[in-house]
Amino acid sequence: MKTKLLLTILFLFSLNIVVAQEDAWVYFKDKPSQAVFTAAPLTMLSQRALERRTRYNIALDFKDIPAEASYINQIKNETGITVKAKSKWLNALHIQGTQADISKLLTLNFVSKVEYANKSINPSGKNGKQQKRLQKTDKLDSTIDFNYGNSTNQIQMLNGNVLHQNNFTGEGMQIAIIDAGFPNVDNFAGFKRMRDQNQILGGYDFVNRSENFYTGSYHGMSVLSTIAGYVDNQFIGTAPDAKFYLFISEDAANETPLEESLWVEAAEKADSLGVDVINISLGYTTFDNPNYNYVYADMDGKTTFISRGAEIAFSRGMIVVNSAGNEGNASWHYISAPADAASVLSIGAVNATGVIASFSSYGPTADNRVKPDVCAQGAGVYIINASGAIAISNGTSFSSPVLTGVVACLWQAFPNKTNAEIVQIVKESAHLYANPTAQEGYGIPNFESVFTLLNNEETEEILEVVAYPNPAITELKFKFPDQVTEMELVIYNILGKRIHSETMAKLNPTTDISDLPEGLYLVQLKFDDKIKTIKILIN
Image (cartoon, rainbow, N blue to C red; front, top):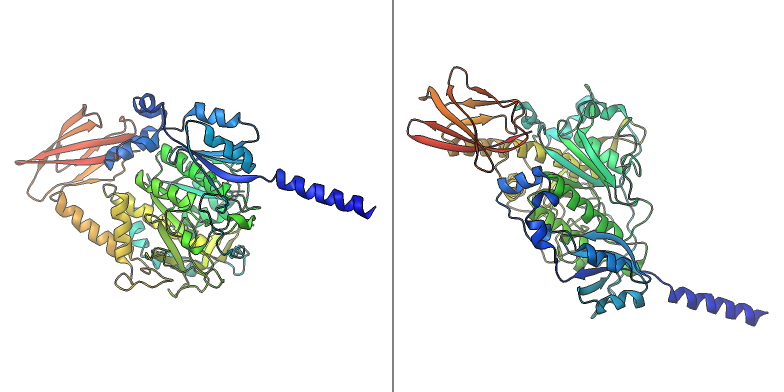
């Protein structure tokens, strides 16, 4: 009997080895349909996304072309292979299957390589020292009733209130929150204002492949609250008038490499919709299967799938803001991916007095770059919690969106600045820019000084001619140079077609644009012997 039992156990053990599933990425060599898609850009990107490319002179390229559908279908039909996610940017599929079945894909003539999540399987792969699974330290439990005086600290620390006082509250900007779930955003009172003002443009649950994004973990809901929450006289997010897409890429119950691929899918969707800013309050270093764990050497901004995706997101013209991580007190105390990506604005956490939070993860990156980049309040920060109440919480998960909202307001004020210019000047405004530290990076940015500097630059650049608001909705107003009493105004669409002209008098420096479709326009102003052209976005 004991012999039979032993044989049975050995058989089941060997069977388990045979059917063990591996996560991997399969990369394609080309995109045969590139010419077809290039000739019809609106099949890849929305009009708003194309206008962003035009505004910042970003050409369409190979990465914008969808992965070849025939290749995807052929992979799906391969025995034992399950396709879990796809990326046009990286021209790859996230797949699951046995090592034997996955290795057969290399015989397909359109496959360039296969990369296993378990690096020991890859050619020249090595098993790094495995790190203990990280404990998520964001605390969403309410501890103190909200106090209005304290609630203002998280924006005043950044001087973001100066932007609000100048009527830059995120209006016209679009932000994608890619997170673990958004339950009760459609019900809680703290989000009523944004619902009433139609600020939620849509979303998607990539984990469950579902149109219902008001589900999952409350983490994403609380993250959103720091930007968009609004309770009159009690709580105001940092960009209360922005519009939002809510995407779920994080499976709160599991930690797997698939979540990286789902995040890239969500970022690609955000790009196609024309989103301006992405917030990521997520980070990856260890997984349920320790064979997939990263080591510090992988935190170089180039190794992980999600960091490579985040870099491409930035190259498309978006600003990507990411929490640095909550592992400052752990044995692994470093930043996580994609906070290691060079172009990502990675955010550490400080307390209400500006002192670094002990849990905030350290840099530098494995290749010795400064990370985190800057800090915002993430200890004792006010959020809307899982009960719908205003509460105190902790985590870089919240310092990141606090700063995301202020960045969106800044970009609203200066839409002609590129994402790289905005990110760089935010870093330069921080209090430790001359002497960054491993845990604080460049420190706490000062958006008042940024606003003043850019405002002065813009005034000089346009010879005292100011067109506002920008983005505009129904009317466009102008500030004239002191010596000018009238200007000739001509509006062109992005194709160069003249669609409106008039003589603008200083006594009534306003033109009605309510009949113009949403989009990017060129406004040409002629006065004296000068001609000035300004880009205007109409929402």
